Length: 248
Ligand code: APR
Image 1: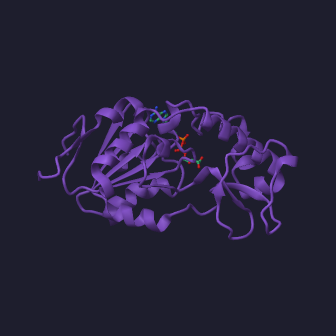
Image 2: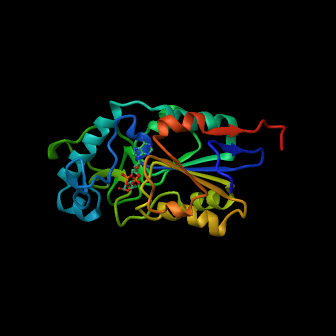
């Protein structure tokens, strides 16, 4: 396939976008996989696993309270805005799945999106089926922790390692119908998201074109039609060439 410096989106295309931590990097939020294997100085298993929660809920809430603070202090960058603007043009031919728990896509104006790893500004019961609720509070001490009416503790509504991602049925439907797949700012190291490009290619539309945007090659680089190398905030605002509604 001919490589180009833009992604051309035709009248009948359905666009599936998957984003990861890299799209929020230029807003000032740290990505996860540093060379030392730590997130903000914490081991993943201590703050993002059911075992870590069981061992030390105070540490887990401290970690997510820090992340709530950090997310409140930043704003969407041109990459988030470019995706929101693409959605405005394409309407329901656009679908966004993010692995990020921050709310920068919503704040940029994206609406047709799902958070497969949960949402930072939601809490839920660790035990019963009461629905998750919006929660911007910080829980930095054990005394501040809250409980569900059922008596169990409230936890962050985040999908931790070993838990099942949210919205998988909807995601699979969208992967099977998309004709353009764009992946932005994710290392391709965490499943199942790392396999989405393979699922769309092998089980989805025969004419799928798939693109990756980020400064480094992801682990699953060979699955893409084309890689655009660079920061998302610089590349995305110029990336889409959308055909007018009445063209072919
Ligand atoms: N623009 C685009 N991509 C960027 C930028 C940028 N400005 N800066 C960094 N990146 C890329 C990095 O090159 C890297 O490939 O973003 C990626 C970030 O990778 P990770 O930190 O591994 O984040 P992600 O892939 O989103 O992690 C997936 O793993 O830890 C869990 O649940 C957590 O959702 C997270 C999931």
